[in-house]
Image (cartoon, rainbow, N blue to C red; front, side, top):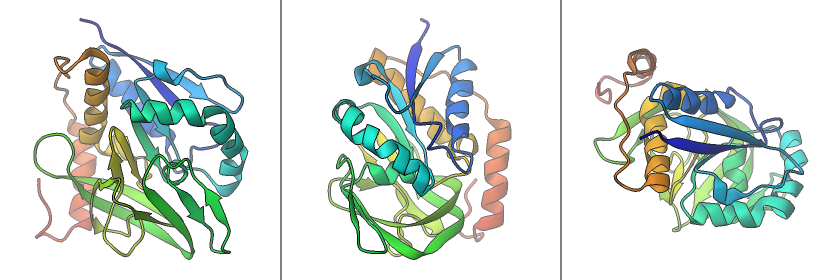
Length: 253
Protein backbone atom coordinates (compact mmCIF):
# COMPACT_ATOMS: atom_id res chain seq x y z
CA UNK A 1 0.00 0.00 0.00
CA UNK A 2 1.28 3.47 -0.89
CA UNK A 3 0.83 6.01 1.88
CA UNK A 4 0.29 9.73 1.24
CA UNK A 5 0.39 12.46 3.89
CA UNK A 6 -0.23 16.22 3.78
CA UNK A 7 1.77 18.67 5.92
CA UNK A 8 1.00 22.33 6.66
CA UNK A 9 4.10 24.49 7.20
CA UNK A 10 2.77 27.45 9.18
CA UNK A 11 4.11 30.84 8.10
CA UNK A 12 7.55 29.70 6.89
CA UNK A 13 8.44 33.20 5.61
CA UNK A 14 8.10 34.66 9.12
CA UNK A 15 8.41 31.79 11.61
CA UNK A 16 11.55 29.83 10.77
CA UNK A 17 14.64 30.73 12.79
CA UNK A 18 17.55 28.77 14.28
CA UNK A 19 17.25 26.01 11.69
CA UNK A 20 13.55 25.32 12.28
CA UNK A 21 12.92 24.68 8.57
CA UNK A 22 15.09 21.58 8.96
CA UNK A 23 12.23 19.92 10.85
CA UNK A 24 10.12 19.89 7.68
CA UNK A 25 13.09 18.64 5.66
CA UNK A 26 13.61 15.77 8.12
CA UNK A 27 9.95 14.76 7.90
CA UNK A 28 10.08 14.91 4.09
CA UNK A 29 13.24 12.82 3.86
CA UNK A 30 12.30 10.11 6.35
CA UNK A 31 8.97 9.78 4.57
CA UNK A 32 10.63 9.66 1.13
CA UNK A 33 13.09 6.94 2.20
CA UNK A 34 10.06 4.83 3.11
CA UNK A 35 8.15 5.55 -0.08
CA UNK A 36 5.61 7.75 1.73
CA UNK A 37 4.46 10.72 -0.36
CA UNK A 38 4.51 13.85 1.82
CA UNK A 39 2.91 16.91 0.25
CA UNK A 40 4.06 20.13 1.99
CA UNK A 41 1.86 23.24 1.78
CA UNK A 42 3.19 26.55 3.12
CA UNK A 43 0.55 28.58 4.97
CA UNK A 44 1.12 32.33 4.62
CA UNK A 45 -0.93 35.36 5.70
CA UNK A 46 -4.04 35.71 3.58
CA UNK A 47 -4.26 32.04 2.54
CA UNK A 48 -7.56 30.22 2.62
CA UNK A 49 -6.89 26.91 4.39
CA UNK A 50 -8.87 23.69 4.74
CA UNK A 51 -7.28 22.41 7.92
CA UNK A 52 -9.20 19.14 7.72
CA UNK A 53 -7.08 18.18 4.70
CA UNK A 54 -3.84 18.03 6.70
CA UNK A 55 -2.28 15.12 8.58
CA UNK A 56 0.72 16.99 9.99
CA UNK A 57 1.65 20.59 10.73
CA UNK A 58 4.79 22.43 11.76
CA UNK A 59 4.80 25.84 13.46
CA UNK A 60 8.28 27.25 14.01
CA UNK A 61 9.76 30.09 16.02
CA UNK A 62 10.20 33.69 14.99
CA UNK A 63 11.47 37.04 16.10
CA UNK A 64 8.97 39.43 17.68
CA UNK A 65 8.75 41.23 14.34
CA UNK A 66 7.90 37.97 12.57
CA UNK A 67 5.19 37.09 15.08
CA UNK A 68 3.67 40.56 14.69
CA UNK A 69 3.31 39.98 10.93
CA UNK A 70 1.35 36.73 11.29
CA UNK A 71 -0.62 37.06 14.51
CA UNK A 72 -3.60 38.91 13.02
CA UNK A 73 -3.98 36.33 10.26
CA UNK A 74 -3.60 33.48 12.76
CA UNK A 75 -6.34 34.81 15.01
CA UNK A 76 -8.78 36.19 12.46
CA UNK A 77 -8.42 33.79 9.54
CA UNK A 78 -6.98 30.49 10.83
CA UNK A 79 -7.98 30.17 14.50
CA UNK A 80 -11.24 28.23 14.18
CA UNK A 81 -10.02 25.69 11.62
CA UNK A 82 -6.58 25.27 13.17
CA UNK A 83 -7.93 24.68 16.69
CA UNK A 84 -10.60 22.29 15.38
CA UNK A 85 -7.91 20.28 13.58
CA UNK A 86 -5.81 20.06 16.76
CA UNK A 87 -8.84 18.79 18.67
CA UNK A 88 -9.30 16.24 15.87
CA UNK A 89 -5.75 14.95 16.53
CA UNK A 90 -3.82 16.77 13.81
CA UNK A 91 -0.17 15.86 14.39
CA UNK A 92 1.53 19.17 15.20
CA UNK A 93 5.06 20.12 16.20
CA UNK A 94 5.38 23.68 17.53
CA UNK A 95 8.68 25.29 18.47
CA UNK A 96 9.35 28.41 20.57
CA UNK A 97 7.24 31.29 19.17
CA UNK A 98 4.75 28.92 17.54
CA UNK A 99 4.53 27.03 20.83
CA UNK A 100 3.87 30.21 22.82
CA UNK A 101 1.08 31.33 20.46
CA UNK A 102 -0.85 28.11 21.15
CA UNK A 103 -1.13 28.96 24.86
CA UNK A 104 -3.61 31.10 26.79
CA UNK A 105 -1.61 34.32 26.88
CA UNK A 106 1.83 35.96 26.87
CA UNK A 107 2.59 38.45 29.64
CA UNK A 108 5.44 40.64 28.38
CA UNK A 109 8.17 41.90 30.67
CA UNK A 110 6.53 45.34 30.47
CA UNK A 111 3.25 43.94 31.81
CA UNK A 112 1.28 43.83 28.55
CA UNK A 113 -0.97 40.75 28.29
CA UNK A 114 -1.14 39.38 24.75
CA UNK A 115 -3.79 36.72 24.01
CA UNK A 116 -2.92 33.27 22.68
CA UNK A 117 -5.05 30.78 20.77
CA UNK A 118 -5.92 29.02 24.04
CA UNK A 119 -5.59 25.55 22.57
CA UNK A 120 -2.85 24.56 25.04
CA UNK A 121 -3.32 25.03 28.78
CA UNK A 122 -0.18 27.05 29.35
CA UNK A 123 0.92 30.67 29.52
CA UNK A 124 4.18 32.52 28.97
CA UNK A 125 5.78 35.32 30.96
CA UNK A 126 8.49 37.43 29.40
CA UNK A 127 11.81 37.63 31.23
CA UNK A 128 14.59 40.17 31.07
CA UNK A 129 17.29 37.50 30.68
CA UNK A 130 17.38 35.07 27.76
CA UNK A 131 17.68 31.33 28.35
CA UNK A 132 20.32 30.20 25.89
CA UNK A 133 22.34 27.05 25.32
CA UNK A 134 22.31 23.36 24.58
CA UNK A 135 19.41 21.46 26.07
CA UNK A 136 18.68 17.79 26.74
CA UNK A 137 15.17 16.58 27.62
CA UNK A 138 14.47 13.04 28.78
CA UNK A 139 11.16 12.42 27.04
CA UNK A 140 8.65 9.63 26.85
CA UNK A 141 6.41 9.26 23.80
CA UNK A 142 4.79 6.29 22.16
CA UNK A 143 6.06 2.97 23.44
CA UNK A 144 9.46 2.02 24.74
CA UNK A 145 11.98 3.50 27.14
CA UNK A 146 12.61 7.25 27.65
CA UNK A 147 14.61 9.02 24.94
CA UNK A 148 17.10 11.85 25.39
CA UNK A 149 16.16 14.62 22.96
CA UNK A 150 18.91 17.12 22.13
CA UNK A 151 18.49 20.68 20.90
CA UNK A 152 19.41 24.33 21.36
CA UNK A 153 17.28 26.91 23.16
CA UNK A 154 17.24 30.69 22.90
CA UNK A 155 14.18 32.33 24.45
CA UNK A 156 13.26 35.02 26.96
CA UNK A 157 9.72 33.75 27.56
CA UNK A 158 9.07 31.47 30.52
CA UNK A 159 6.25 29.03 29.81
CA UNK A 160 4.21 27.52 32.66
CA UNK A 161 1.84 24.55 32.32
CA UNK A 162 -1.72 24.15 33.54
CA UNK A 163 -3.38 20.80 34.22
CA UNK A 164 -4.67 20.48 30.65
CA UNK A 165 -1.30 19.51 29.18
CA UNK A 166 1.28 16.95 30.17
CA UNK A 167 5.02 17.38 30.10
CA UNK A 168 6.96 16.13 27.10
CA UNK A 169 9.86 15.37 29.41
CA UNK A 170 12.27 16.33 32.15
CA UNK A 171 15.14 18.73 31.51
CA UNK A 172 18.50 17.09 32.16
CA UNK A 173 20.68 19.85 30.68
CA UNK A 174 19.61 23.44 30.03
CA UNK A 175 16.61 25.51 31.07
CA UNK A 176 13.55 24.07 29.32
CA UNK A 177 10.20 25.81 29.38
CA UNK A 178 10.88 28.20 32.25
CA UNK A 179 14.20 27.41 33.91
CA UNK A 180 12.50 26.71 37.24
CA UNK A 181 10.54 23.46 37.41
CA UNK A 182 12.55 21.21 35.08
CA UNK A 183 9.74 20.88 32.53
CA UNK A 184 10.84 20.48 28.93
CA UNK A 185 7.98 20.88 26.45
CA UNK A 186 4.36 19.77 26.52
CA UNK A 187 1.98 17.32 24.87
CA UNK A 188 -1.73 17.75 24.19
CA UNK A 189 -3.49 15.11 22.08
CA UNK A 190 -1.15 14.85 19.02
CA UNK A 191 0.38 18.30 19.57
CA UNK A 192 4.01 18.50 20.72
CA UNK A 193 5.49 21.83 21.78
CA UNK A 194 8.91 22.80 23.11
CA UNK A 195 11.80 25.25 22.88
CA UNK A 196 14.27 22.90 21.15
CA UNK A 197 15.68 24.58 18.06
CA UNK A 198 18.71 23.37 16.24
CA UNK A 199 16.75 21.92 14.42
CA UNK A 200 15.02 19.31 16.55
CA UNK A 201 13.97 16.49 14.22
CA UNK A 202 17.19 15.87 12.25
CA UNK A 203 18.98 15.35 15.58
CA UNK A 204 16.24 13.16 17.03
CA UNK A 205 14.97 10.59 14.51
CA UNK A 206 13.02 8.80 17.26
CA UNK A 207 10.68 11.80 17.54
CA UNK A 208 10.55 12.27 13.76
CA UNK A 209 9.39 8.70 13.27
CA UNK A 210 6.92 8.97 16.15
CA UNK A 211 5.22 11.95 14.48
CA UNK A 212 5.07 10.18 11.12
CA UNK A 213 3.63 7.06 12.77
CA UNK A 214 0.92 9.11 14.48
CA UNK A 215 -0.01 10.77 11.20
CA UNK A 216 -0.18 7.45 9.34
CA UNK A 217 -2.39 5.87 11.98
CA UNK A 218 -4.66 8.92 12.09
CA UNK A 219 -5.08 8.81 8.31
CA UNK A 220 -5.11 5.06 7.65
CA UNK A 221 -6.03 3.49 10.98
CA UNK A 222 -4.12 1.63 13.66
CA UNK A 223 -3.13 -1.10 11.21
CA UNK A 224 -0.83 1.33 9.36
CA UNK A 225 2.76 0.32 10.04
CA UNK A 226 5.88 2.43 9.80
CA UNK A 227 8.67 0.59 8.02
CA UNK A 228 11.85 0.43 10.16
CA UNK A 229 14.52 2.78 8.82
CA UNK A 230 18.24 2.98 9.50
CA UNK A 231 19.38 6.19 11.23
CA UNK A 232 23.07 5.55 11.85
CA UNK A 233 24.35 9.06 11.07
CA UNK A 234 21.53 10.80 12.92
CA UNK A 235 22.02 8.65 16.00
CA UNK A 236 25.80 9.16 15.88
CA UNK A 237 25.26 12.94 15.93
CA UNK A 238 22.76 12.62 18.79
CA UNK A 239 24.99 10.33 20.84
CA UNK A 240 28.00 12.61 20.30
CA UNK A 241 26.08 15.55 21.79
CA UNK A 242 24.85 13.44 24.69
CA UNK A 243 28.37 12.30 25.52
CA UNK A 244 29.48 15.93 25.60
CA UNK A 245 26.58 17.20 27.67
CA UNK A 246 25.49 14.47 30.07
CA UNK A 247 27.28 13.29 33.18
CA UNK A 248 28.22 9.63 32.82
CA UNK A 249 25.61 8.55 35.36
CA UNK A 250 22.84 9.94 33.11
CA UNK A 251 24.11 8.78 29.75
CA UNK A 252 22.24 5.90 28.15
CA UNK A 253 23.06 4.37 24.79
